[in-house]
Structure formats: C-alpha cells, structure tokens
Image 1 (spheres, helix red, strand yellow):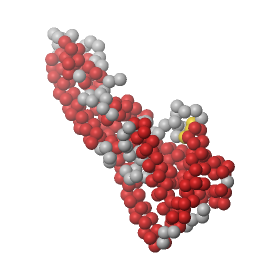
Image 2 (cartoon, rainbow, N blue to C red):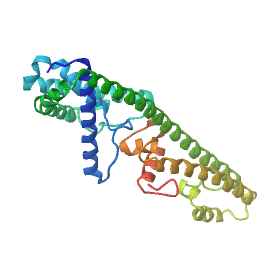
Image 3 (cartoon, one colour):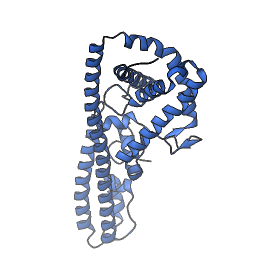
Image 4 (tube, one colour):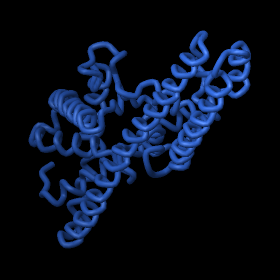
Length: 294
C-alpha cells in the first residue's frame, strides 16, 4: 500500500476522475440528462482524489483492517468535504451543496448520513478497488510517470484558474441581476408616487398586458401618461439587459457560469437567493421570457 509521491499524484487523478464519473452517472439517473457535475471544467472531482490519497497515507499498515478503514473513511472524506465546502463558500459567497435539511449536519457542509456512506465506500475502494490500481500505477516506468503527472498537474492548475474565474463571474452576474431587479422596483415606486394608487406587483411590471391593465385605473390622473412613458422606456432597457445575461448563461452548457448552475442544482447564495431561484427556473425551461412565476 506504500507509494512514492509521483504514484500518489497519479492515484489522486485516478480517483478524482472516478469520483466525477460516479457523480455524473448518479445525476443522470436522477435527472435523465448528462451534466458535468464537477466544480472544475475537466472530468475530475478533486474532493474524491484528496480524500482517497489522505486515507491511504493515514491508514498505512492498517489498510487491511476493515474497522480502521471504515473509521478513517468516515472521518477523512468528511473533513475534506467540510473544508472544501467552507472554503468555496468563503471565496465565492455561495453554498455549492447543502445538507442543512438532513439530521446531524455540520454547517450544512457534511452530515452523518453521507459520512457513514463514505465509510462504507472506503471499505470497498481501499480493500477491493485500490490494490489492482496500485499495482498498475507501480508498474509504470518512473520517467513516464513523472511526465504524465506534470502534464496532469499543469492542466489541473489551469482548470482551477479558469473555474475560479467562472465562479466569480457567476457571483458578478447574480449581483448585476439583483441591481436590475432593484432598478425595476425603484421605477415602480416612482410610478406609484407620481400617479398614486397601489404599487404594482413584479408580474404586472414585467408583463405588458398586465401593466396596461393596471394603469388603466389611473386614466385621467395628472402626469400618468408621462410617468408611464418614462417607466416603459426604463423597463425596456432593464429587460434587454436581463435577457442578455440569461441568454449568455443559457449558452454556457459546457463551460462558464451557466455550467456551474447546472452542475450544482442545490447551489445557494444567501445574498442573491431570489434571483438565483428565478434564474435556475429559467435555465430549466420554466418562466421563460421574464422573471418567472412562483
């Protein structure tokens, strides 16, 4: 079970790829569609690679003890998942997965149910799957192994940089949409102040027919026509910008912020929760052409 640093690097990528494959298959069975389920663009989930390597290093000579493997399998992957989730939240102000509704969870990043599942999976992976993989990796000539590792590390580093930029872009896009919605609300408040009457709902503001129907009650009121013209012009600008943003995310099915939204269907952003939910419904084909309906 012992390995060199170069062997561990390749082992990391092997299990990161296997973890990604498992995530994609599991998601496909549930949603009946293929989605890249990783944070990175490439076909790897680093959490699985880090978790497996950490377990192998810590277990050492106890890798043949089922009890030790289960215990380490519960603790190590859970710690990796907790650290990864908290770090992503700190960096990008979003929860990429959330176990808050499950019992015995810690911060919503890990929960007892999945920690126990990690332990059971560790027994299979460490005691059954890993021995033949370790023998295959050990049989690779050292020069070829080092070249392979260096290439994989270079691609991995580039992918981390690109994916981080995409995550930042997603947060920026959500913030822009929040600003558009705030501008629409300010226009509603101004219109209501000018013509009097009850404030318009979001659907009335967005839908041309509903807007005309709501404003019909204001006929004859001073400044109503002028206020309506100004508001419609501003609303048109907001709609154009909003549609540009959603169209861009809609096109990003395999790369970009749009892919991240599809990869993490339970993604939560405390600062942009309503906008994120409306955007998610749009990308899944609901409420197209506007802010959507609840």
